[in-house]
Length: 320
Length: 142
Image 1: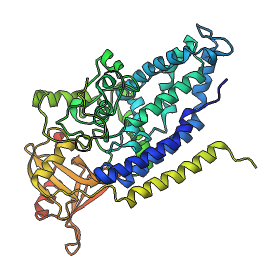
Image 2 (image 1 turned 30 degrees about the vertical axis):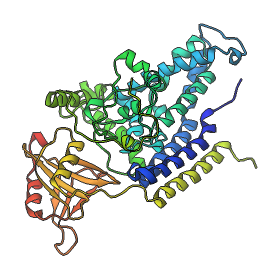
Image 3 (image 1 turned 45 degrees about the vertical axis):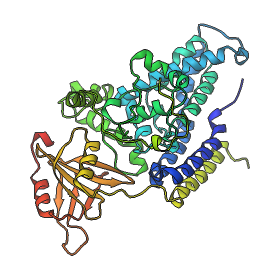
């Protein structure tokens, strides 16, 4: 059985790429980085690795137990079935789409995933701003169908590792658009900038990991609008570089809400979308979008020029 | 003695993290954007809360923060966070304090969120804004 963690091998590449982007930023867009923000993002990445090693055992045990009930058996040397790898990769990416969508639409999941969105910057260090508390959610259950189909947990983990590595490079403002055919199929910096944006038009859009086709298929795709400056982060910016607060703030907020809520609403604070409140005192992303659409007709956009437009690296082909 | 691989990886990553963060500082990345005009405040307020339209604004003398009031009487605190801005629409729990007038700041805004912290401002019209903040109340601001 292959004992291979692609993410561990990619770490040196991550470091070199961040270094290269910093040099680009120095020359073209110094505001793209902020030292404290970078330190927090990278500390997130390190803590995530440690947390995964310490807390990932339960999910692994579930997968190994589920594997005994697999529908298809690829045999004792399952890793030699070459075609199973690309099939697993695509299905794992489909799984990623749904677990990611749940990460934005269910507060329990958001409490963990919000970590990745908590920076007001969008650069390669932001890609490493990974959660510490993923194992405390039920996100791993989304992979159980793949295990039951017959994909070995190790194969899924390796495919997931490559998925994560792919997603690293799209966290940048240095690339405007990739070629049209690429933008049509793959997740790209342009598509993912939309995902990290707090502009109302972009809220809860572009959940894709590797293939943007999932968003187009399931109705959550939004293209990047060139003349509207993107604001990154979360709707209510943290406003603090305290690492532990950044890690746990939404967990604390959610548990506080559950504690204070009337009994009949406690579960909703766990399972409803972020921003939901039983007394309507807060706004969900849907409410913010609706208010924006009512105010602007959904089309008005202030004129601005994105960093990527000012500093193009890739070609300027039209988005698909 | 064999060192656990996770420990080696963690130590190596920690060194790389500190090196990259130090490099970002050495390269002078980031900047200190200023809120120097009503337009600056209007733009920042719209980023803090989409659709927030100030009818009155005031900027900190150093440009690190601002206050804005909309037509509904809501007051927004905006302050520099790194090289971006973050803000809060002030609630009834918010308080404006008037420190020693000899100091560099003449208003301290406590938005009642401990982790957001207090914001120190030097305003031209400090007394009026402090009074307005301390008057904020009602369900629309809670």
